[in-house]
Image 1 (cartoon, rainbow, N blue to C red):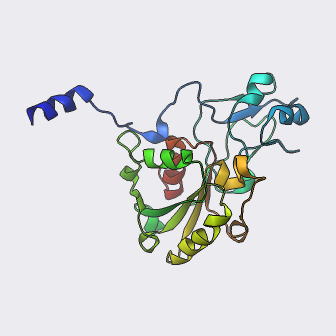
Image 2 (cartoon, rainbow, N blue to C red):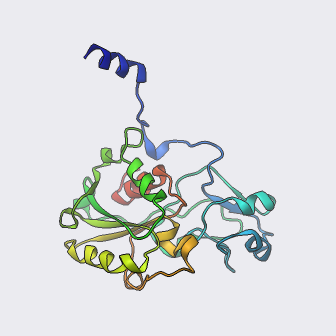
Image 3 (tube, one colour):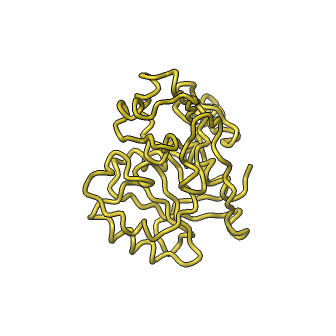
Length: 240
């Protein structure tokens, strides 16, 4: 017992005091900034997922590899700002000259403002976003301090948080899990694969079910940073 107490004192306080106001390493690729003179054709030439559109950079497709910023630093750079979650798909398009991500305006009903139970479904992902989602509830990030928990059964859940691009073998399981959650229920897409298919967008996927849904939150990343998950979900619940 004495040794356990000594170890606890030696470790000190490991939790991040306030994840919503935390900082990350300067090398972390978060919110991107496109110059007004950015050439999307050149940028797509080095982008492995063709994430640049006529309107700008699609963060829902971007895998944050940094190839574009290394090749053309005068056109694009990534700030180490992890607050990249948004409440609608169109807000993930970053236009030239845009400095900040749009704010999350949507809010869950008041009865979910202090407690939110989510069923996690990994639909064919590489397990990176799944690991980061699990890490969001470790001692450092402690998402449960906001009343958010990942539950084992859809019958206990208020919503579903999806990771992975949705391969054919998981399409039916995903739909059945959603059906098992009682209304009102909420869909959250976590990671580039869940949002757009990511690296696997041109592969053998079945995203037809997603085409019928209206997600309430989009958290981009490849993989998603735990702080992005915590900030997105907490903001959705009304925390600042």
